[in-house]
Length: 179
Image (tube, rainbow, N blue to C red):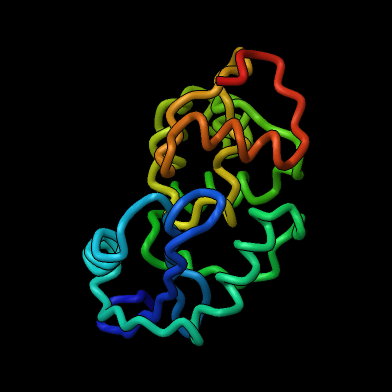
C-alpha cells in the first residue's frame, strides 16, 4: 500500500533551531520531514512524491512535531514514531534502515553502509539514497560520513553546517574536519 491517493496531514513550525520545520504524517506514520524550507515548498515536494492530498493539521502532526522539537532542544535522544516508508524504493529502505540503527553520538561511513546492505561498491548510491531521505533527523542520515570521517553532502536546510550541528548535539566525536 502506498500513500498515493490518500490524505497526508502536516504541521508547520516557523521557528526552530534549524529554521522552519514541516512534518507530514498519515495513518501509517511519518511520511516526510523538512526544515529550512517554506511551507509552500514542503507541500509541493511532498505532494509530488506521495501523490497525496496534503492538509495542514497541526493537531494530526503534533506528536511528531513535538518529538522533533524536543530532539532539537536536546531534551530527547530517541524517537518513538512510526514511519511510512512506502514511497521509498527497496534500496533506499535498506539504506535508511541501516541509518536508523546507528546509535546517537556514533557514525558510519558511506562505505560501511554499502557493506552493511551487501553492496560494498555502492557508496555513491548509498549517498544518493541518503540524500533523498524524506524523514531526516528522525532517520539520522546525518550520522553517515565520508570514508575519512569528513562531512559530505547534507541536503537538509543549512547543508553541512547543519549536519555538523546535529552531530555535535548528539555528542559525536568526529575524526575529520568538522565543517
